[in-house]
Image (cartoon, one colour):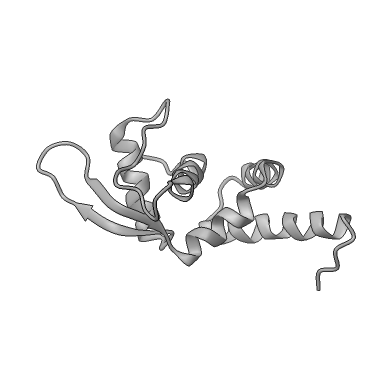
Length: 124
């Protein structure tokens, strides 16, 4: 399975938008199977973007409970929240061929700084 950064971002946004402090289970996303969503959730845990409990089941995809964002998860969302910045970041990744998560965050931060500078906000 190939990692899908759009799905990763959607997962983190869903956790952030939860009315409680943490989600009890991951939502469904159109165009993605439960297995793909579960695997991306596991990857987000591995990357330190999410925390919570993982429940191993004998059948079906793993389930997660009390899922919440970590500091790193919040940082990823703040850097990629703006749809224009996210699209520019993905375009840059496409030109290179692929990006690691840290590099995606750096590129998004670069676009954030450029936008702030264009608005007259000094960034050192």
